[in-house]
Image (tube, rainbow, N blue to C red; front, side):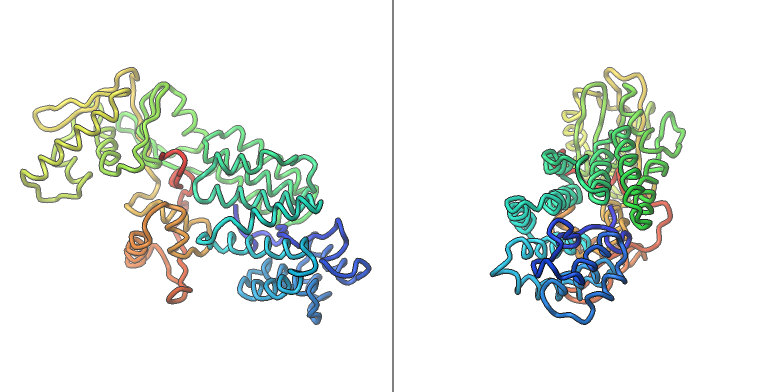
Length: 433
């Protein structure tokens, strides 16, 4: 749900220290306390003025957090590592806070290649030593990472043990944003709307303009078209609420955004079967008429010039699709092609992305505004690194993705694509198994 560059008010492990009034150092150090309070209130520059010339571990940690909130992640990581090295032997809580801050930087900068060990270890240490706020923050960060890699159910379980109502306003707003993201991925829009309301209320109580702006920006997804719905040949833009209503309407819905076919009481997932998904979409867009074989071959196999081997393969894949969709629809052969016949539903709709293309899922992740490494995209999408690299090179040639840096430091971001949807194209790892 955004990063430090968008929300200078975001808490990271080690930033507030209100409970102990210190950062692992002298509890009577008023300068450290003042800097920590400034960070907690979102005044990054005031915090830096307090500790800019100090090199003791507490000051290094606070400077690192301040630099992270300003977007200088490389400098922030250097400062936090120095602080963590100094804390490691004599202050387990301060060390855990530094580790958690580094883990949050990795999350915000979309470095997903590491393990979750840092989150888990920091959470256990902080919870064991009574630092309830930062322990809760660790759980929220773990949930955000799980949501980012397509595991919304696990993300919700990570937050299940938190008493969110008892948290300070800034952290309560952050947790509410995570819950809103989970609800959106589950297409429970009323729950998402309630979570955004809670986040806005908490942000107003925190009185941090950057946090209030972040909540407002995040909630715009509820008012932004996310897909095109095609029904009886008529195409229209739809909001998330419309998608939820469409899936509950009792009609047969071929969702080409998430590669599912949904009907009364049944959902069939084709995310791991792209050929079948392409055939289902083509048949759905042609309904109630049949679709010519050449059209199906073009959409499923991108075969412009077909021969008997293509037609044989089409028959095989249609057989597989017929078996997969048996609970919801029949697929009958006609003189010129095939026709889809819903079993129980009386009407059919097809959901397609606003921006179509083979690499739409990659663009959906890049559209969050952060710069991604190819390895992190591989983790988030569950694809091989080489597949992702080839896709990124194609997107760069088309002017849709922009590389930054070179070698292992290379990152990728999206070119300007107005109105590009991010929600319905994101992967759902749990649902695919």
